[in-house]
Image 1 (tube, rainbow over the protein chains, first blue to last red):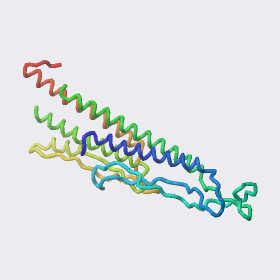
Image 2 (image 1 turned 180 degrees about the vertical axis):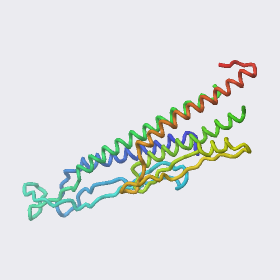
Image 3 (image 1 turned 60 degrees about the vertical axis):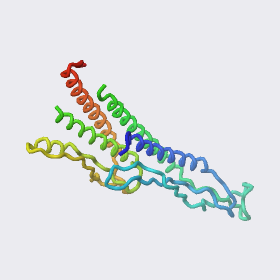
Image 4 (image 1 turned 90 degrees about the vertical axis):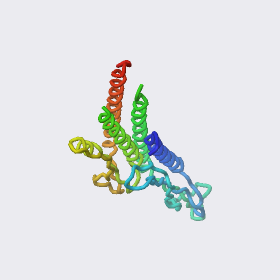
Length: 134
Length: 114
């Protein structure tokens, strides 16, 4: 058990929530990506959260162990006016589920706030411990 | 005198561990398959204190039995926030009691009581 351990644990949670917010922002920013049908398009990314530390003991927080990339096939749309269209007039458009990204963004924000609050509680407790004997 | 200090010190240790477990539960509130952990030392401490022959109290960490959501995670964020609030207040109260004990000793030894 490290000194001021809870602050590090909450920090890892804040990091994870931040990664999630960044991922959602990246997905939304790429929602309108268009490429020729011969290429792969942007695939929706999801962070993979992994608990740290061993089971049955006080854990060590959380970490983002990687990013799951959804299919890069996207959706083929008929856009004959688009300069990237193929012989059939089709282009490949990123398949981003805007609804799930917005919900994820709210969850990530709540997650971030919960961790920040736990950190502030830990800080208060540690500060009171530092008054011991004074 | 030292008995009270020992009891309070044990409580601070238990509360510190509980605080880390709460922080860990909140950090993993969105991790699929994560099972929340609970810390209990109060029951063990109460038992040890009521035992006239003397006994040793211990801090135990157990998995939370709450039903998991579809992703296998059973962390109740609201519950954990309440626990964090309680934990901090208990921690501060315990530290205040320890300080009161120290002031008592200090005063009795000829120093200032405040």
